[in-house]
Image (cartoon, rainbow, N blue to C red; front, side, top):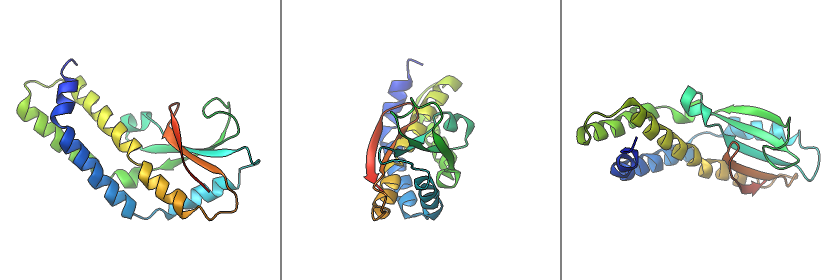
Length: 170
């Protein structure tokens, strides 16, 4: 595990390039399904104090489900006991990334001796977290497209149980 930072540094440019390429593809993709889910969630907003949070679930890159949580909060995010929420299946947006990851691992295998499975998993965890946070422009674009809404509900984005950022008002 001591080599993981060195491994990440070794593939940093390739990883960043693959994330930028992925972001461009996702920004051009159809987002109507997610917009309709957000509109449906807007219907569950009960006060002007409420806000909607889109958060990526870290467990999703372990399970491969690529689920994000869309929730309405009235109190501080993740403190509220039973927020109204729905899961967004983001799997269609993450198609082909396993092959991209294997290319990155291939580069590591050509330059490092005996890479442990735990090292590969740690590199994968870092890569997927960068991708999940890298979906911020996708959700920001949706927020901008929905900004004409009458509701004026803040839309936040971040990792589940982690820091969130306001990405728009819908």
